[in-house]
Structures are given as structure tokens and as C-alpha cells.
Image (cartoon, rainbow, N blue to C red):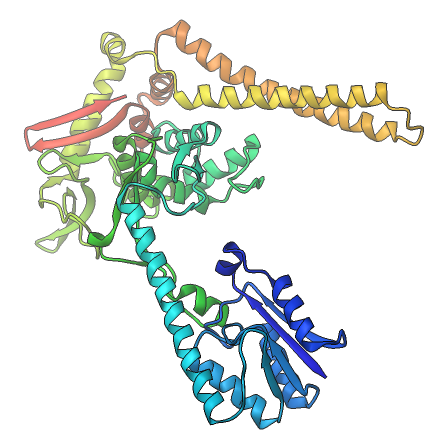
Length: 498
């Protein structure tokens, strides 16, 4: 039986190589339609572990095949060693080998020609790979984006080789950062944000209906939203070949930072908001889960006024007794800045900040001085999104009504259409209720001339005033008012409120 083997890699497909063209030429050489076809579509020629090639060699061992026809030696393999292994197996089982684009003879001269051509093929592949990588690097150095990474919030402009902002997705990115950095957020951490986005019906980049917390985390950690996009950051050399060969490999290997190529793209998030989100991500376990046995009242809020680094809670020992401090020191591996070592007594800082906050809550004049209209940007973004969704539901019902009015199809399932219209109406009403709630929040802001956060803080504090508040209750009040506590020195502590 004659076997025809055809192969084309993904890269070759992009350059116009086709399976059909190779197959037609091979069939002409076979001069019969009674052949066994083996097609590896989308596989690199650098590996032997290809499904159809493996099947072909198995059939050779079984004695099913007497001749193999291939378009060119490159199609068997782009590596000389692999070509020799394949031809050796064919010779062992007395199977002939013919190429459309090359004369192959199983003699000394033919073997020499075959080996020399295989060596040139391997060299050509290495040269193509080198030129491709060099070309991409040069483009990146010119400020062009050489590959679409499918980043949420952006569309890839293939013509100009850059990213442009996807306005709808960019609004969602801004909402995610606002949700996460807002100390008065109603969402419990990243998971709460993911659940909320799913509930709003916002599609993911690939059109999915469910947001996973890891996707939200990746967005919060992506510095590209500040307008700084790094290329040549990851070393992926050999990954494609190893993946197709079924070999284990470590993806995401990061190159040395001096090899990265910095590219400017449109900005969606300010640098300050991004950096603040990174601080909160490091503090996330304590902010949302309360994992620490010792609850630090100002966890995630304290910053060193000397070097600008965050100060974290630490336990220290003195004369055999434990005491707690806020310290500007990072001991974890890979910390970019180890901190200046400034230390502040936890009790002293807690008492000072809490007394200042209580003074504000108890003094109407100071409350007035600290209040202002705070229209949260993400509330407006949610309103715009919900309005769009409501309009889509209305348009859907209109299309169904038009379908009923113009259709002459007697077999049309009117009950099914009515059920769908009812479903759209229910969805529209649910969205309208959400819209009314959000618009009321904006209206309340305008009429009361005060932030909802501070109002809630005052209300909550007045309810429990006179009782002994525990750390968690005090934290709840603090996070409604305090944005950051800056420690300049022992006598100079600045409390930044919202």
C-alpha cells in the first residue's frame, strides 16, 4: 500500500503553505487514488512526536505500507538527525521513499545528498527563527506592539501595530480598580468583585459570562493599564516545540529586566491608583480574611513618611514579653525595597489615630470640614452599563414583536416567543431596580452635600457610642474615613481622610 505523508506548521500556514497543495502533488506522483493519507496539520517539523507520523511509522512496522511519498524532505523533519531516524526505519522494513521536489536514491551518493540537504534545512529553520525574533525585537524598540496579548481593556490595531482603548472594557477595568481601592467598598476582596461583575452580566474578553477571581487579580496586577507595556519580558524560546512534543517545561520564565523593551500604550489607570492597588494586594489577607492572630487596627493604612514604603505590623520581644509595632521593613524574598527600618509602637499609633477620628465624629463642625461630595466614578460607569443592558432588552422585545407581525409561518411557536418576551421583561425590570438604586445614591450625594462613607461612619459610631468597641468594630469605622496614615516621625503623624 502507498502512503502519502503531508505536514504544515502553524507558522507555515500563515505564509501560505497548504495541506491541499502538497497532497495534490503527492497524489500525482503516486498515480493512484488508492493511498493511505497521513496529515499533520499545525505541527512543527522539529519534533518526531507527531500524531500522524507516529501512526505512519506504526503502520510501517506492521507491514501495511510498501512505499511512502512526501512532498519534500523538510516535511518529514527539519532536523537532520530525525530525518535519518525516519529513513533508517523505512529501510529496515524495506519501505521505499519518494519526494515530489527531490530525487532520493538509497545509495552512497543519494544518502550524502539527503544528509547535506537535511543539514541545510536545519540551518534554514534556525535562520528563520533568528530573523523572526530579531525582527520582532527591532519593531518593539521602535515602539510598536509586535503581538496581540489579548489584554482586557484594549483592542489590537494590526495595521499600526499598537493597542487602542476598548472604551467599554476600559470602563470595567476602572470599575475593578475603584472597587478594590475604595476603603468603603461593599465587596469582600477580589472574589466579591468577580461575583459582582458576573451578576451585572458583563462579558469577559472571550465573551464568557462568569468572572473568575484570578482574572480580576491579573487585571489588578497588570501595570500595562498605566500606559507602560513591557515586551521581550518572557523567555518562550523552545516552549512551542516542547509543548507539541509533550515534554514538561516551565512557562513564564522572566528575562533579566535590562532585556525588557518598554513601550508606551494608551493609559486607562493612573500610576498612583495602580501602586495603591499593589499595596492593598499585599495586605489583602489581613484586610479581607483576618488571617493574623493579632489584629492590627491600622493594617494596610500606614505609610512611612521618610521613604514612602508601607509599614506593616510586626511582633517583637523585649525582656521575654511580646509587643507589637508598625515597621518599615520588608523581609520577604525578592522585595524591591527593603524599607528604611522606621518603627512605631502599635499602641501609640492606634491610640493617636483613633482619638483623632473620634474627635472628628463627635464634633459637627469638624465633620462639616471633612465632608464633600464624592460621586464615585464606578457608580456612573455601572449606571451607563445598566442603561445599555436595559436598551438591549427593549430592542430584543421589539425584534420579537416585529417577527410575529411580519411572519407568515404558521408553524411558528408563538408560546415560545411569548415566554422569551416575558423573560426579557423580567430581566429589564431587575436591571431597572438596580438602576434606580444607583441613581438614588447619586441624588443623595447631591442633596446632602456629604459623603455616604462619612455618614455611615457617624451613624455606626453613634449606635455603639458608650460601649467598648473591639478592634474589628473600630476598623470598620476607620476604613470609612481614613485613607492613609503617614508617619513622618514620632511627633509628626498625618492622617489623610477621604
